[in-house]
Image (cartoon, rainbow over all chains, first blue to last red; front, side, top):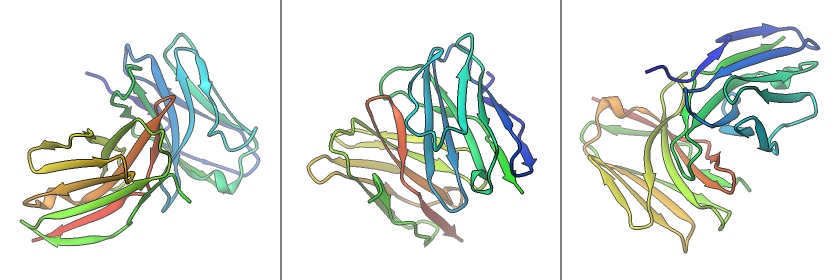
Length: 114
Length: 109
């Protein structure tokens, strides 16, 4: 069956531009998560959706970052006025939403801000 | 102090060796624990959950010590294909995964 998909796979942008990253979770998964992984760093939690609502946005690093989810499915992560320190791999994961359940990760979007 | 701490390695071991990774977590409210595996430039994948009683999956054994806030992963009879980064993970509340920075394992022939 189809796994989590993300697009684009790679994005190069200039400092100050806005970018939008997309995640398509596994069909039927109610929970969706965004993480980012910087070079040499661990994965960092950004935001979590249960259905279309985001009960935990605690990981968003600044107000330049926002995310939404519509129809309980696709999610977009938007970064406004990108900075060089935003360069990272942005990973999306989905799960059935059960406590302690397995999260399935997409292949990620590699963002490079020049 | 990081919420989940691991020795970054690398651990370089020959095929057939037994290798153990340790991990500590700082939040005593952490509820669930996992080991994920991440291959180079790939996404993380669940290796195994970690239960209080300890659990085994083939050559892999995971242990949890809540009193010491300590998790371990033991790999027996290492294979070349075990070469990867092993990520220790804790969760609490919203199921957001709190990752350690990972321990890199390189198995050589």
